[in-house]
Image (cartoon, rainbow, N blue to C red):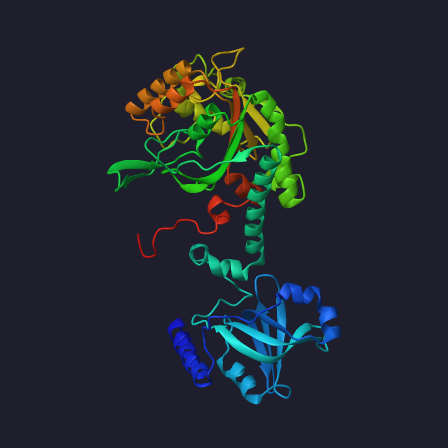
Length: 487
């Protein structure tokens, strides 16, 4: 039967309901007990004989003759409804048999009992339609198989897949656990602008739009308020964090999306060395609270968060693997190393981009958890220089299962050094590197009023998708897709 034929049949059932005086889409519901609550207090309800009202979506229908069964799901649990023609009004029974379909939302009132097979059920005395479905759900046993259809009709995927539903419940728990971790340590949660005059705080290509009221172009932010949050340190707040959406007009891959949720935090009077212990506590808290364990199998890597986290020096490991020193090598030497090692790149190369590609080839082999340190200054315009080696910055990255899953700095608070690095980034941008950062004079002016030393950190929802061992788009509720039919 085609979808069009099924819709036509269900339209006819709307008329059956109407003729019987039952609304197909009533305003109210009499549901007073969740399915989960009914099952949890089943023995008490059965002993008392108290009447309850349940509601939910019909997930299956069966029966013959004078008896009909329906399993309903209300988001908290699943319970069986039993309609016995001998025990209820015949018209009530026949209306259900003739008008109800899998996918409908119904409510039913009656008393709970156990069937001969021990199935905890509701013996229905009355029922009514809450929302008539006009399209058929895929059979539960088979569900959705087509990957694109799964993402386009995510609501059906969640409905029919307990595993997917559980993943999104864990996603909520993940961000709640992060928020609770910060609040328990005296951080205040802030909200910073999403529309900006000049996007900053990251190396990324922004989305651009036009602000009609102010008649000017603006950008969707590419970081979770990094520069704004550091201005709040200037303002006197010692600990701030934000969990919010950011947007990057870049390529798409297993780990990269164009809009996603990011956590960023800044703590005054701290630094990278102190921050390492903070981050180990944060990551261990997240995995324990959400998954109840510390060890994960991810993309062929075994990751144990309870282990000690080794330090990996960026320049040393690149020199060991490729034979060039990222600090003193020329641009030509860096680019030639990329070519000699047949590393695929999708962009024009300069020295910073070439060195970054060399590092990424190494990173894929590291299981972690580990901290990457000793990154050259030219790769990081916002971190403070190392006191022992001014050619590198006080930056660390969390390495998990061959991926970068969190970045942190001893934040740069010298306005003159910051200006010089922004100007160097601007030269790269003027030369065609559209991911290089812009010269932000407003931020430099704020820093000139004095900004305390601070530890800054950021991690995105990629960490959650990594822990789930899923591509990033599968771990989002409604990932952006090309409109159906577009080539």
